[in-house]
Length: 292
Image (cartoon, rainbow, N blue to C red; front, side):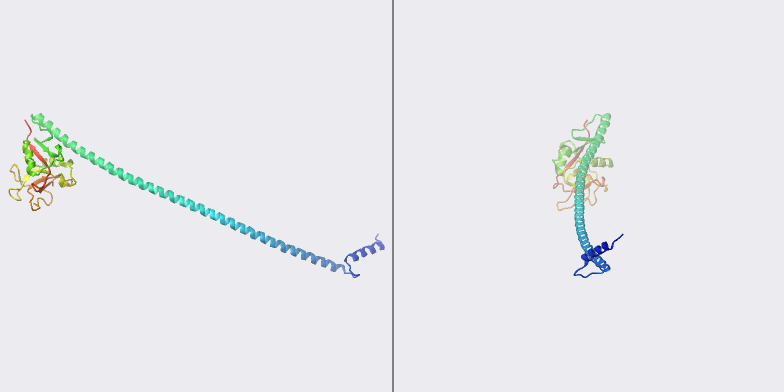
């Protein structure tokens, strides 16, 4: 049971704490004052905490932006490096392909030259084969034969000066004199088979830079009557299809009175043209009967 004396002591203690100068405040006002002070302290704490959070957030954003920039720069560097590397690899691949293409073209040209040489050898062997077969047939039917460097064909022996020496060339009179010294004369082409034989035989006898340098003298001339072409056996040439286009033309001041033949890949029948008998030096073809 609370005694009057104890209550008197508690009141004295309370008023001693909150009283000043003997004056006193109501209890409710003191409570409100304490709450106001508490609110002020909480507000200040909240403001301080907010400022610190803002600083932390700003620092975090700054750090994040810096990191992002670093990552982006690194990514751009990597992409640029990969692009440069890919470009260099593509450039090297292109250069390698171009080198391979050039090398392949060189190899193709080399192979083509080899094939052309083989083809010429094949044609030469075919001609020799034809000659050998003709010689066999001739020897089986008789005892005739041709001299060295002569080719037997269709009962006649033919001498192509190129086979003896491709460097020695003569004009028309000297060529005929050489044939006569061998017991023969310049060739007389008087049928299609002989025309074909001569054309195919001289096909691979090419020593000059152009077709005209590889021509052969034959026994055909119009020296007695201009425009009237006569073989050395006094047979007048009436076939015009064997002359090349525009030939004979007697071109030049010295005149062109002697006949030549060449190999023509475009038309093996058009092989003849006229030339100066003394101004030009070329190969020649002799013809004779086989020896008995």
